[in-house]
Image 1 (tube, rainbow, N blue to C red):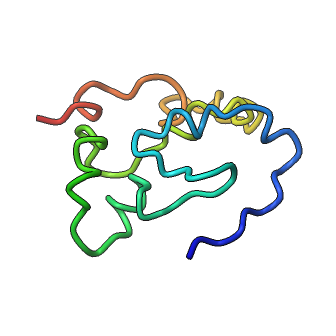
Image 2: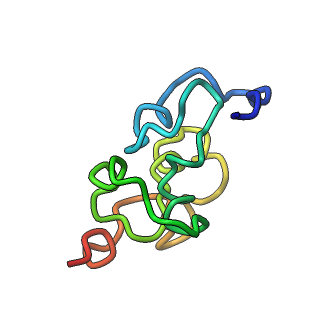
Length: 100
């Protein structure tokens, strides 16, 4: 069973950008992430094979996913915008985003 949602941090919860942007629908309800559907979990932590139903939703992501972080408006306050080349802001290099 999934853990009960934790109380949102101040500010978080006024939008659903992370929930909407998740390519596999890993957010099963507000503040509840099902790691079994999360691309980051599936490609980094998971020791088994990836559910065939999720594979098409992952596109060509082979190691991790930060889409929820990229779309979160609260991350602009975290100071990442000052880090050149941060994977959280801006499009990734084409050779990383679309491996052959």
